Image (cartoon, rainbow, N blue to C red; front, side, top):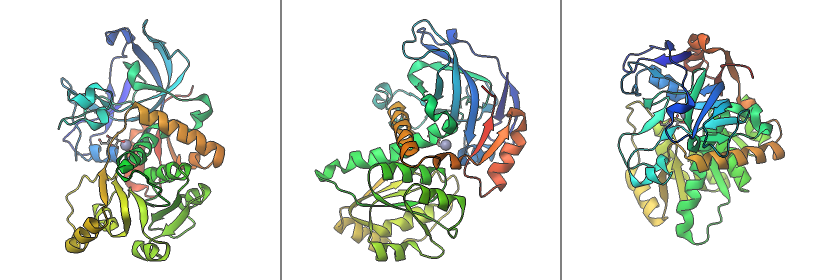
Length: 367
Ligand code: BGC
Ligand code: ZN
């Protein structure tokens, strides 16, 4: 079967690889699930792996199959699979457990080991292929009523985890009543985080550079949040006008903005960093001022990566809420389809060149 793969370490090496179709028997305890892939989303991570900034092949291979945002249909299940059946729509988590205690209790997204195993990213093949098999523990059912949002399940799990982690850590406050959220960046993670924060009843300001009128700004407003163009109303000005934020989700992909956002967090607030910055840029920060403000304001900085099964499940509930409250908005994120695995060059071109693409995804097969 065909797959879109790269040779890690070699820039711009995307190509079609050939793989054997996996079987449910390859999972030892009878809990294997064979999934026929329908659609796979790609993001900056795939772009940077193709640029050879990171990513490693599985042992025994000189290529890595890309793709970590999966959507498919169950084709066959092993004899001991209890809660999935052929015909179910599903997505799959990305990371697989290592050996730390966090890995053994299902929170592999919090592994304390340096080496992590992620399908389509590091040491494990991804989903940009025709079929995949995995243990039922990593396969998450998608309700049929959300199948039109297909590849957004994984990005949504990232947003759900980011917000959940913030609420978890704010238990230090005994009572935490956040009112105002800033979301920095109106790409897929920014938009999906906007929805998660709206579902919690916050007043959400989502910021991006472009003037109002772009699709991103329309989706933000469609989700009941306020879109702020930073070229017209810089972050500091917004904070002066409406007050500092109780929670900030940073998802711009810029480490300079990540540091800069430390200036607009309110007392007792939490700043969540989600950007994966593969480069080596340096930036100057007013360290005395930030240090003083953060100490005097009991402020918190939280990094978050990946997501486990519970975040996928929570993200799916949040998407369902979104469809009820703001019908038709979230699917507008699915901007750029690519038809078939063989069109991998177009997939890469869109990732590299199409700056306005909110989501590039490959239609691997029709149902
Ligand atoms: C993925 C995460 C992953 C992270 C780091 C992101 O693009 O969505 O699942 O943990 O990259 O590899
Ligand atoms: Zn990703």
